[in-house]
Length: 415
Image (cartoon, rainbow, N blue to C red; front, side, top):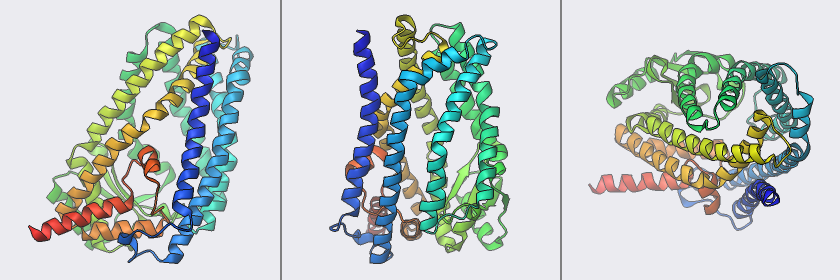
């Protein structure tokens, strides 16, 4: 039985990575082959030159991603067969149980970070640089990494300490951690826009009074209370465009990337209208509920696997932090195969937000135009493989969103 579980454990982890790589390669073959065509709804914005550039960008990202996944799988197998048991012995008797837990996960995180760092550097300073997206300087990159590490310690240490205390105190702990996860998610939604995001970006009041007035009118029309409208200096790191609505209560704010301000006002309003749609349609609390249910399910399964590994000592480890690492590694890999369900629910909400934006502005045209620009300027893949979309797209493909909006426009004219 024990050997059977080890085989299942390894099969799930390896199958997950192999399936991810297979999907990436199949999607690349489907999207970037010589027979691939520009979708009809995008032909007025995307030239053949743009299309070929998007295919090269996809190929470079997939190549890097596949190498990363293979490296990650090798590292995971090293963890399973060597590093986790080694770390448990290394930190034995090093202070209290909580101190040992912090040392274990600290070393674990550090190894992960150091292995991932070269890929992150290559992605930003080679791939993104090659296609004209990167505006990050090495100095700013180093600063971001330092801030990220400090935040990881400040936020991660209390979370790990609390989780390990619960694990050590209760044999059945999944529901306590589920409650704590809900509290943390709410807390993070409040502090992220107020404390965390400003550590990386500069936020200033939108100084375009005409656009600001139009945005205020749009907010009033939607009935969504947003105290502040900010411009974010995203151009210091990327040329890609976006806008988002974040926070809850007094921390709620509308944020525009400074890179999107080159869009005409109606296009900006349509993107903001989409974000407002998520709030008006109650997608934020719905997603929060879905996430909590999913997290609770993951923790319930993890708790069962944890108890089995702890009782049988199948991997030769006995400390709660080590057993939890094995358990969560297995269950998180297993949950990868449920991602299509979560993505389906997310895509459904995105369609609803698109519909709301079109109705709020009285026409879908500005959103159609902005989607076409986003595909062109972000070098998005205009031809993703259907199965890849099912597995990885939490937003509908731009072509699908545009077609749905065009159908709304036809219905509106006929109506």
